[in-house]
Image 1 (cartoon, rainbow over the protein chains, first blue to last red):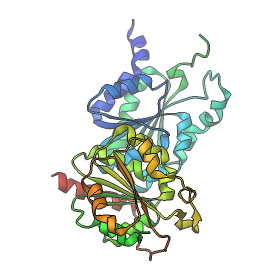
Image 2: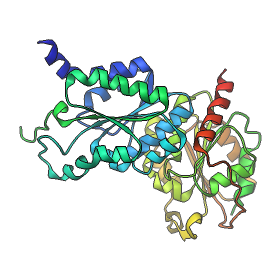
Image 3: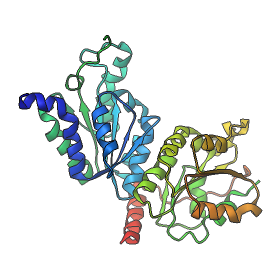
Image 4: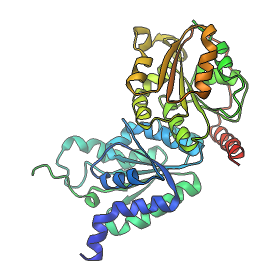
Amino acid sequence: MDDRTKTALHWPDLIYAQFRRVGVRQVGYVPDAGHSRLIELCVKDPNIHDVVLTTEEEGVGLVAGAALGGERAALLMQSSGVGNCINMFSLMRNCGFPCLVLITMRGEFAEFNPWQVPMGAITEATLKLCGFLTYRVDEPDNVDDIVGGGCDMAFGGDLQVAIVLSQRLIGRKEWTK
Amino acid sequence: MLDRREFVQKLLIDRENLLVVSGLGSPTYDVAACGDHPLNFYLWGAMGSAAMIGLGLALAQPALRVLVLTGDGEALMGLGSLATIGVKQPTNLAIVVLDNQHYGETGMQPSHTRAGIDLVAVAKACKFVDALHVSEIGAMSPIRDLVHNGRGPILVQAQISNDVAPRVLPSRDGHAIKLRFMEALGRLSG
């Protein structure tokens, strides 16, 4: 296996390594295929509180509470979840809470399910309207650099940062076996 | 029926290092009416988030007690949070719902609890260690003790009258409220 293939397979491990580097202690998520490896790594880590949410907007409250309590938190969600969070994101801006959100995209490259397209098509614009800096990752080789930079901006500057993990990066969902 | 101000005042008496998150609207005014405190995080928006803020805080500060004081409408908007809290079982978290069965901020429209939707039953179904109703101020002492010392997660549904109390408005500057809270917490943790 060459280095490039290794990176392609292990990009969630690179995100996890960045969580470790900056000391993320709470991770909120709604179960998601694209994030499954990263979720698994967080659940196994005794230094991370993994919090499974019933809806993504709960995670925004979690981030605020964690920050108030002096801990760093990250949220993992699918693009559809961004729409669920819009009003809650006001909490991040009103109080200047550091907010790091990693978003797996649906509704773009090779999407089989058209019902995913309307939210997927407006995900990045929605995040920008909500005050987030957004950084898109299309290539596995760029994961480490972009996620690392996003972590530093969010936690170093009390900013709201969204890392948009494209459907090309994640790979197309297989609908038939 | 309880008077909301009397109930909240008795709940917060001798609070020491209790961390308090108040839901938007009247619960924020009720907490402020007891006297401003740096360990109060007053919400003025983000309806439905209070319980989850409490969870994040409780996980981050396991040696301290966290109280979320909110209204029935705010709690109903974050009903899924009770399931999420049930999964994590934070032993230092209590949620007190001031239930007047109405949306007080928007013109006193009846809420779901008015129709008999029972938040205590929901909390029990969500594996809260303790969940109970209170409607008499005479029963206050064990309730205060439970909220301050009992094993969480705890939910208390307090049946308050829907009399409107004078508004006591704390700061609306989210940055200031946050920083003051974090500084006070930093002094506690050394």
